Image (tube, rainbow, N blue to C red; front, side):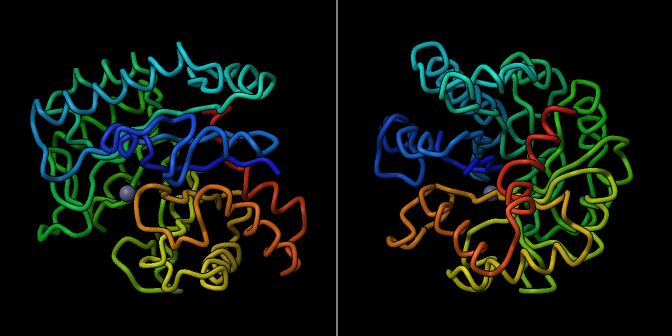
Length: 304
Ligand SMILES: [Zn+2]
């Protein structure tokens, strides 16, 4: 089975807990991930809401540098800089690592920071985390406003640089601003369906359709708090619903490994094999499963 996952917080957790990426007791390490036939992983650098300004930027840059050091010194980890890097990674049994930043606070309120992030080959930026920042307001902030003027400029510049805006965590008004402001695709990297289980982190059907119509991706989270139960049945309900909205080419996984507490029996990234087999038993055919676990993301990232 091939796996392309849209979101994890493993870089932050490794740095925070002093663990190695090769082998650890977190949700993801290279030893487990590389057991899949091919593995591409979006590694997000998380910027907590408690950190703002230059400190947010510094913290983000420190983790991006750590990822690049890993890329230089670790023959199992290969950062995707351009399309051809997928082949290099897959042909040499390396993890194809896509760098992302979770929280636009990392810009420290300056558009020039986007150039710096681009030099680090950041391909995705989640505009906010749960709270507010210079770009806009997260779904758990008290503010219902949309993107700030700076947020709109940032999104426009991201598009020019080829950095994909990620609307996960954003509030409703901000979401629709992003849809209006962008010509290209947007993604919701780790979320679920609000029609199946109501939660402010989840997408309504019209939000899902808006991302779909822009040719974007919606990554389904494994987080029980968002899917309404930590079991495969709950997960499958969200998958089924998104697929019923013509989501065959839109839905993927954005598991959020190392971003929440996973029950011990799920372990970590290795659970994806069990989820695959569970869905096979539920009569999902192999070509659809290929799309969900790998193909949709691969097509997206090799075309943007
Ligand atoms: Zn998140």
